[in-house]
Structures are given as structure tokens and as C-alpha cells.
Image (cartoon, rainbow, N blue to C red; front, side, top):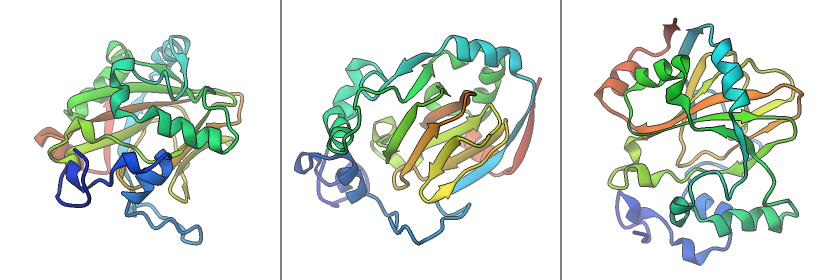
Length: 237
């Protein structure tokens, strides 16, 4: 599975066994510039797609109420951890003096059960779909990292997309940083980013939850058709 830049699929990754640090390993596979003096802009590594319009406030209350706190080790089923390099992820936090078991967000995995978010999901037509609702409450923080989503399509990871749909408005104290870009949003805004290369992180220092719908999956013809219409506006009734 892991080689030394010998191909166009999973083989191009450097070997994680050569690293204690998840950050250093993922950074070694990234084409991002890692230059703090460069100001990233929309369209460099991060792209707005469009906007959903409507009133999902009733669902939003249930989404928040039915979410549960997770950390790096509980964010997904134990059976998946052979692919998530948990020891390397926690190493970075401990090495920096942080709490590797600290809560990073509240998860709600029932996005298909709420009418509004189900309609949003269906628009994209993704295969091998993972849909998660992220509710980040006061003091929760997702440490800076680069995603590892190769398992969604190991033969051609370029077909894998990670899409964020913002369900609440930005307010001062909500942080969503893509590379060196501090992102601000309105409820309904949709974006995607270069998950293989772009470091990103989130935090909430307010007293109001930050809620988003995260979709990960393999793009299809339906996905391509939607992207060709960007920036789109879609009403969720």
C-alpha cells in the first residue's frame, strides 16, 4: 500500500512507519506551500460551491440535542482505526503539551434522518458516502491536520471529495481555517477543499454552537453536473 512516490495511486505516499508524527507524515505528502507569509485566497486550495436556502431551524435544534462529544480516538468506529493512525495523531498533541483525549467536537451521525440535511445530501449524488454533522461547542478545538481519505477510493483518491455545508452563521469566535485563510460564512454556504494537501483546523470560543454538515465520498456524474453549475442556489423546502 505504501511506497515512495512510485505511482499515481496509494503507492505515492511516503511510508508512515518512518514517522512518529502524523503531522510530519501527512506534511511530507502535501504540495501545500507551508509559508506563513503567503496569504491564501479563495480558489487556491479552497472553493465555494454555492448555497442552500431555506429554514432548517427545527432540524437544527434536534441535531444539536442529539449530538455527542468525540475526541480523536472516538471520532469513528474502532474497526476503522487501522486506517487512521491514531497513535501518530495523538503523538502530535501530547508532544505539544496538549490533551490528546480532549473533546474536538460533537458528532451526530444521523444526517440522513433529518429532512433538511437528507435533501442536501441527495443533491450531490456521492458514492461510498460518509455524512456527519459536526456541532462544535464552547472550548472545543480540532487541531491542525491534513486529511487522510484515501480509503474511500484507493485506486484513484482524486475522485474523493470532502464537502462542508455550513448550517449556522459565522460569528466572531468561530474559527475555520483553511491553510492560511480564515473562512467566514453564512448558514447554507457550501464549500470543498484540497483535502490531500491543505492543512486546516477549527475552534469555537463563543457561547453559540458552530454546526456544519460534512460529506465525504466518491464523485459521480451527478456530482460533476452539480459542480458545473457552481455557484448554485438550491432551495430546501
